[in-house]
Length: 269
Image (cartoon, rainbow, N blue to C red; front, side, top):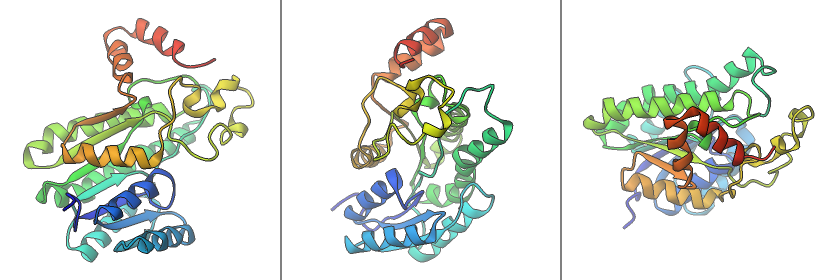
């Protein structure tokens, strides 16, 4: 029997992309899944597809960038399925731009959806998950480890997620809460290489590419979902893909000068 069979799982950003892929993987493993997202119609369509796979699925329309919305989703999931065993913050936003040209308002917007929503999830879901020795999963990025050029407010918002994950591991891990930080490179999507064209007209051509021109292969959402759940079963602290990126992260910590040099070599201009 699957480890996930019968467990209650909550996935934000569950109507598309990695969130939907993760919800699909959980359903096939027998979990009872709550998905949430901003668009009710797209959310219902995603839920119908998951139910077609035999899933017991609840959908909650909400915008996790707004205070109180994450707690509403957590409460709905716990009430419907009698508790919570897994929660993953898949909702997020990326962008392109240089720091000087990126407004304070854009920093606030990305911090709200990428970081503060994760804080809200920790507040709302943490005690429920801890009671079940469950899993709190944050989707960071390779940009949680280092800050490539021309990603605007994105690296700062993802660095904050890494700090949150470590602090929670130290504070609540001994009490039973498993916290996993997932740091993937670019995730494959149909519009890869085209989605930032309006934001990159004044930037080098590479800024429009996945990962801002990072010289790493994109990972398929379904593959990442499987690796994420396997990491939870092993109660890993981090999942970094590709694993070799750990070397660059370590170098950046040891020597900012050499880290900057290595990072510039691993991203196209």
